[in-house]
Length: 385
Image (cartoon, rainbow, N blue to C red; front, side, top):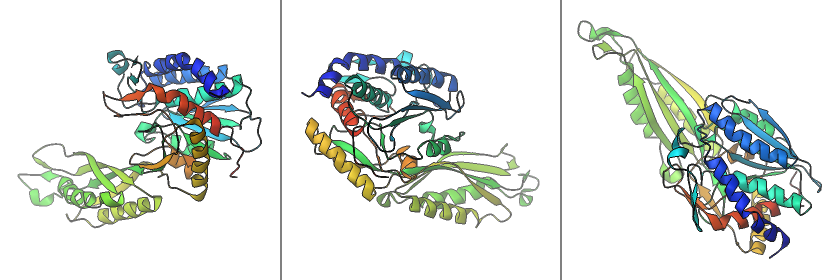
């Protein structure tokens, strides 16, 4: 066992304790006050590691915590990134708090993705404690990833914060110890809103133009854009409209959840959605299409494949390789970072599964080797930019 592995073994109780504190702090993306308490835990740890820390949009939706540490190796900074928010409402942590056995951990956010932040922070701590040479580090902690940054400008702020980095490691979880993610689908939330003409449904129905009827025609066409084999999916997740059963509805809208494998597919889907909106079935109605938010897809590049090879060499030395590159159907902030031209790997965090459910779990024994892999990558001398 090398010095890094030996040191991290001594830190396992502290890693579990810090993870417990994060998991037991509710942090739904919709509640900035709770998010800020979780941010404070991570910020205090960053400051204890002598990182320079600041927040963008503090106390508002989309807060981003940034911690920076100078390097002792040449080259541009390496990004560690992850999100602190979960899909679970306030009170969930009290109902089912962090628990651990010898093999498994459970609790809200235990796989998606609070331990990943613990692992990034303790990788930095290990490098400092052992005085190992390392690259400059920029750790980005996002607080509304689960909402795809809706109602915030966090996507733009994240893109800006990533500028000038050499490569990035996103600390989302993985299904297996020897897997990392090189491809993720992107996502959009698109609002399709129809304006019609109200009228009395009994006395003058002919004067009305039903927005709901028009939207119904459009929904059939919109859902037909899905092609799961190609990685395309359009989901009409919510519908609202109308005011009374005896009034021809003059307004209706749907919120679309749109997924795609490539950013070129995103542009194709958006063009198709706009074309459907522009050709109404119910004469006299008008439709507007608004992209509420989006996350870019993570697409493999020559540089990201080189980064995967470097990670594989370290993983094999640690005993958790060879690494397998996988594609994830979920969206991730790794896509936003990669869209800035930065080689990016995702899925470097905890091993586990059943995200977004009460049965979410993580594997205790994956904490140390995965943290060791992160620390090894922070010592990479290869420079991409």
